[in-house]
Length: 311
Ligand code: SF4
Image 1: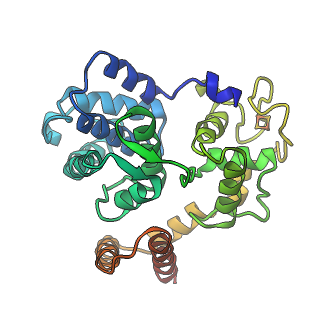
Image 2: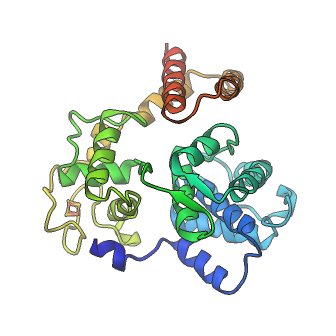
Image 3: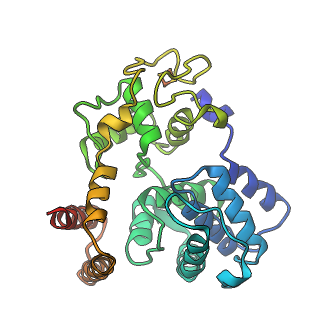
């Protein structure tokens, strides 16, 4: 695919490669830790702001020690969180990221699904969600050559950018193919499409899709309404559906479900829910449940839990 031969890597990859070529990282452990740090920051913000935070914490020595929030300058927060809180949350999550980095580099060969299961279950890092964990897996695959990850089972993260572009391309119909998380109709259709055109390297379409859906100032084309198709990577093949409305607003149901769930939850309920989830993951681990069965059970637990919160 031409795009991937000539693609402009995202800001983190560019920064990482520059640092690596200068011998900045002293081990694969530090490489993986830097990747986890940036992937965790890369949520509900721009890649540039996430990188700004990564550079800040790395300068304060976060690859070599557990930094304290009092030592750090304030980080750029994600939406709806204060800078003070986001800085503290980073410091609180750093021990878990250290533990996960150590586990990842202890093994040279991984399956992307097993690695994601590890990140989402046994060694879960607070605020490293499903999309940012997939991003971390892709970056480890592309940036840490000693660690070999079998990527054929990789599923691309769906967000509003990817959803919008896929809808306009004609891959999904937002009136029918709703997205509410992994395994939902839109997710399945998009993953099947990606597998059909890039069965050995499904992750390569990831960046092409989300970067096309970005704002014009970030080099994107497929805005929420009235996209600029001139110069878009998909211009010649796109069906150009729903140019006057944002298909993501029509088809993504996750944020509504989460808002409803969160607004009806007290802080105590959220803590209890987190503890129950941790117990459930531990039970699955003790029963030796892995792979697809593990993911299905986790998904069912989350759906049932959201249903009971919403009632
Ligand atoms: S060609 Fe136009 S409608 Fe299609 S993906 Fe590109 S910007 Fe969006």
